[in-house]
Image (cartoon, rainbow, N blue to C red; front, side, top):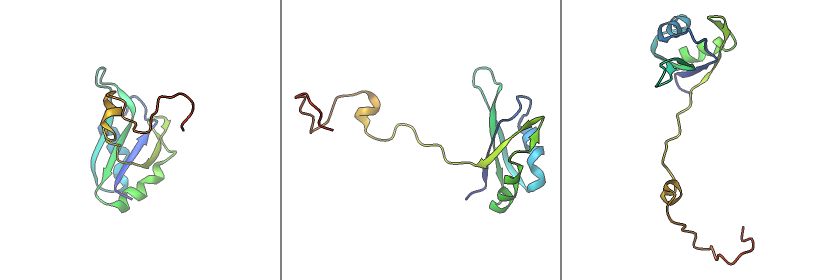
Length: 110
């Protein structure tokens, strides 16, 4: 499963240290980050906690639904973010229309 958790519904007051403090009772927290807005630097209300082991992370899942700084947080396994820019380059860049079976003759060919 992994050792990284996604934590959402965080209070705007929770910072990296506060998130770390809330989860450290479950094991060795090796990385803890509350995601902030680039322009305002305010919390976006979610973050990530990485544990040293999968077992510690699995134990920390029980934080789901508990209160941190007055808000009931959601805790789940973090999933890798899909890479941007993959797929057909013509469609990504808005480039030329490259459908070999497009007859432009009207009618549906779906």
